Length: 210
Ligand code: ITT
Image (cartoon, rainbow, N blue to C red; front, side, top):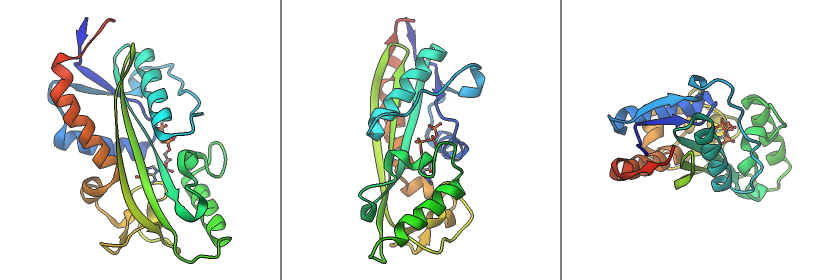
């Protein structure tokens, strides 16, 4: 039986990795080492075929924990736009098709919104962080950030849909925020802080049969 001493971040998205590492540096747990999927060659991400963020987060965390034989943490997240019935939602990474770039997904978002009669588009970013051991899922946490879609876009920071995601209260897009500020208020920052708090409280008592 082994306690948690290392945690694999089960994502290949460099924008997410940057934000997760930033949050871990601020609030992470000293006696848990963080590894990346690139430390475990041969890993193939499972198809993200679940209809919910939590379903896909669980799928990714469990697949990575099984492959690596250690604890894993996965992020499933996306943009939900009210006038598009919640799309792109769980399809955010592949909105313009499998392997689409951020620019292609953003272009598709603009095209879809230009078809709508409304000029304002309420939106939210949603994130679910799931933690798994090789034998099963342990916990999941969610975070949300509300905004609107801004066309034309602004800013060059962040990743994905950030230049189009306008934060009304602070009058800027997510791509105009520093990583520190985005982390404080974002869907991912909120879910990660909940996950880290849970790990801090429980990691010394968690065991798995490996
Ligand atoms: P992994 O599965 O390897 O983690 P992925 O990019 O496929 O990477 P998701 O299926 O969770 O991950 O899709 C997340 C997508 O949602 C991401 O590619 C962006 O298009 C969008 N997204 C999520 N969080 C975002 C953020 O903070 N800023 C901008 N776009 C974001």
